[in-house]
Structures are given as C-alpha cells and as structure tokens.
Amino acid sequence: MRVEQNLGNKKLGIIICADDFGISSQVNNAIIKLLELKKISAVSCLVTGKGWHDGANLLRSFRDEVDIGLHLSYCESSFNKALRLAYLGRLDREKIFSGFKTQLNCFFKELGRFPDFIDGHQHIHQLPIIRLALMDLISIMRVDKIYVRNSSISLNDIFSRKISILKNILIAIPGNSLKRYLSKMHIYTNNDFLGIYDYDVNNNPEEIFETFLKTAKHPNSILMIHPSCGNERDDNKNSCFDNKRKEEMRYFDSDKYKNILEEYGLYLTRFIY
Image (cartoon, rainbow, N blue to C red; front, side):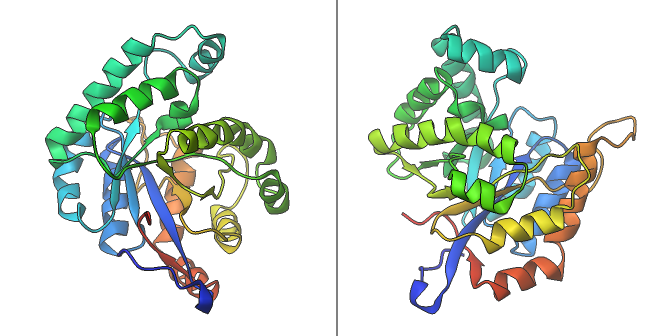
C-alpha cells in the first residue's frame, strides 16, 4: 500500500487511521472489514481493551500491509484530572513509563514486533510529563523507524473548516508543543492532523470527513476515525459516541468515501519516511 508521492499530477497520499482497535469486538469487526476493503492505511491498538486479545488474532495478517500502532492509555485518573496534574507537574513519570512498558510488551507479545507508530487515547501522550514517559518508552525500543502522532493544526485550517472550532484549538495547542518537541528530538511525526469533531451534537460525519479530506494538502497528513459495527455498552443503550461510530463506519464503507478520494486526487498511504 506504500505509494510514492506524485505531486506533479496533483496526487496526495494521506494516512487514514482507525483508532481504538481492541476496545471491543464491534470496533474490531468494523476495522477488520475496512482493512479487507483497503479503505484505511493505519490502525491504532488499545491493548488495555477487552477485545484486544481476540482482535489481535485477526490483525496479524495485516502486519505488512498497513501501519499498526500502539494507542497508549493512562488509566490512573480521569482525563480532566490527568490534564490538571500534568500541567501542575504532579504526575509520576516512572509510574507512567512502567504502565506504558506493560502495554508495549502486550503489543509485542500478540503481534511479534514493535509498533509502527505511537499515539495516545484522548491524545494523552501529548501532555507534559506523559510525553517524557513516551520518550523513555521509545528509547528502550531502539528501532530505526517509528513515528509519533501529533494533533497540531494551524489556526487558519481550523477556522476555514468551521468544524468544532474550540475543540480543535484545544487539541492543537498540546499538539503544536509535541510537534516542536519531536522535531527537537529527531523523532518522526505527521506533517498535519486533519481535525476532530464533537460527538454529542447533531452533526453529519459524512459532511465533516469530506471537509477534512477536501482540505488535505500535506504529505503524511493523518485523518483519525472511530468506526464500529455496534454499541459499546452492554445494556444496548446508544450513546452519542456509539451512534457516531456507526455513522462513521457506514461512510467509510460507502462509495461516497471512495469517490471523494478520487475527486480530490487522494490515495491511501502508510507513513512516508
């Protein structure tokens, strides 16, 4: 699936990454289907999820076709508490590193190799102290090529897309910091992050993703998606996120998605070093 850029013919390769593989069988099944249809080029794995072990058996056959990454989780506290403690400098770097190392070992045990990239659940890897623990993790891997996902977005792109402006600004701030830090550390990272949207409001994922795709303009740009074939809750009550996951799956399983790629001269690619 790795294809050379051909910008002279107005062709642009982008990375479409499905997150949360391993969180549930419903998410796993959706991502595997998109892999079989060659509609995504990267998968990020949540090894702490209840569906990881069974899902890993299905994912192994795609190890050489797409980028498979580690979706780090920090479960010691809620995201808001972790955010506050991170900026107050009150998180335990060694403890976080230990948890990350356990997740890395779990990934390696199931897939037989290190991840192609690393990111974090709720972008947790971008926070102060936590990103230092991430650097500690990368240092013990001693691999020549690995990239770390950042959520850096220019203000111009955020305002021109007009999608969840405040939410995108809030993820762009730590994303910008991480991107600069990774550059200083000579660690590969994506050139652009195409954005996120609010799941708890009445919006149309199809229109949102088409806007993101239409405005892609840099090699190694990443679009993050969260497809699922069903509900995550056991009580069969649909959450807003469940509904949006299913809508995302319907879109990326459709011809509309394929047609948008063709119309705007886009094709799927793995990370290009």
